[in-house]
Structures are given as C-alpha cells and as structure tokens.
Length: 262
Image 1 (cartoon, rainbow, N blue to C red):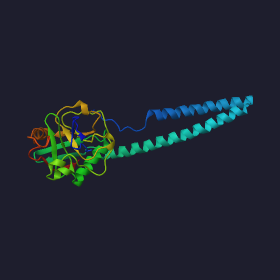
Image 2 (image 1 turned 90 degrees about the horizontal axis):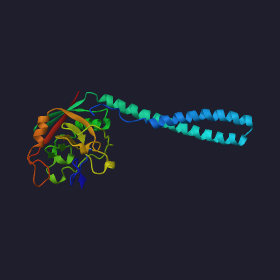
Image 3 (image 1 turned 180 degrees about the horizontal axis):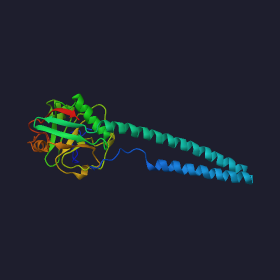
Image 4 (image 1 turned 180 degrees about the vertical axis):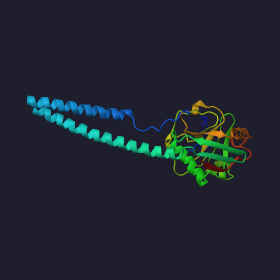
C-alpha cells in the first residue's frame, strides 16, 4: 500500500519522485563557529604554555601539547568538511544557473500547460524533470490520477500501457533525494510524488495542484509552478473518473509530449 499526497493509502505508488528564492542549504554556521573556537583555544594554549615553562611544570606542558595536537587534527578535519561543503555548494549553484529561465510546455490531449521551475529551491528535482522531458521519457504517459479541488498526477511509465491495475506503480530505476522546502502547495504548484517511505527518495511521477493542501507542505518537494494553462488543469481535474479504478479518468488524459524551452 502506498501513501498518496492526500495522506490516503492505495495500491498506487506515489513515487515520482516561498515564492521567495532561497539558496540550497550547504555550510552550517556551527562548523564555522567550531573553527573559531578551536583557533581561540590555540592562542590560549600558547599563552598558558609560556607561563608553564617559566614555572617549570613540564608534565602539564606535555599534556597541553597533546591536547594541542588533538585540536589541530580536529581543526584540519573541520576545514576539510568546510571545503567539501563549499565544493557541493558550487556544483549546485552551477546546476541552478544552467536552469535559469528554462520552462516546459506539457502538451496533453486536453490542451497545453506551461510551467516554470524553481532551480534555487529544488535544483535536483528541476534537473530531473527537465532532462526526462528532453529525453521523451514522459511522452505517451497519462495523468492517471485526478481529484478535483486537490491535484492531478502523472509521469508514471506504466501508464503508457492499457493495464490500469498497474497505473501509479511505476518509476525509474534510480531515485533522487528529496528537497523539501517551504513553498506552499497552492493551485498551479508543480510538485513531486513519492512513496510512503521518505528514505526511498523520488522518481518520475509529479502532480500539479488544483487546490490548496497545507498538509503536503514540507512533505513533498515543490519544484515549479504553472504559468499558463490553469484552465487545462481545471478541465483535467474535473473529468469523469472510473468507479472501478480509484481516481483514474474514464477516458485517458494523455501527455503527448513535454517541450523544454528558454
């Protein structure tokens, strides 16, 4: 059983997986604070060592020298962590910059929906969606789950076929890590589905919000929003659904292709 964005458990896999831009989290202030504390301690040790030498306390001096060596080792390790975090930050900043002003046009059997991305808030998710769209991964898939006033969900490779029993259970081989952020799940928001197990990450299934759902905030990764075509989203959300297959449209809503452009 799998957890849907609305919190219910069904047989469908929910893997796609602030409108104020915020950088991707990297270096933590605590690390820098630790380095400053250790540096200050070095100065104090040097001062204490001078006093001890004058007093002839060799045993205490040896102990402080050992402590000093340990602190120097910790300082080197902390500096290595800082350098690693800086490198990761630069890599994400590069990726984010590459996706600035990139948009996508979701061409469906019911019309077109254009979206923009939030690469600073969720660079990995934006890159995941853009590259899959460019490769044609979503071509021929369907919006296999629609709930008016809530959301429409698609992106499952299983939905290319006609076996409705496995719709919602598909995804790619490799998952991506979550990038939960404070962007509210409001109408038009583009977010990534996932399984009930957060540790499993996200895959290819995504959903577009048709209503407001605060319970999804910080639980699913928002990585974009609709810029035009909400009338199409509204039309898809309100199509008749199957009484046999929960929330599935009676007549298929097909994603014919997704065009990426700048």
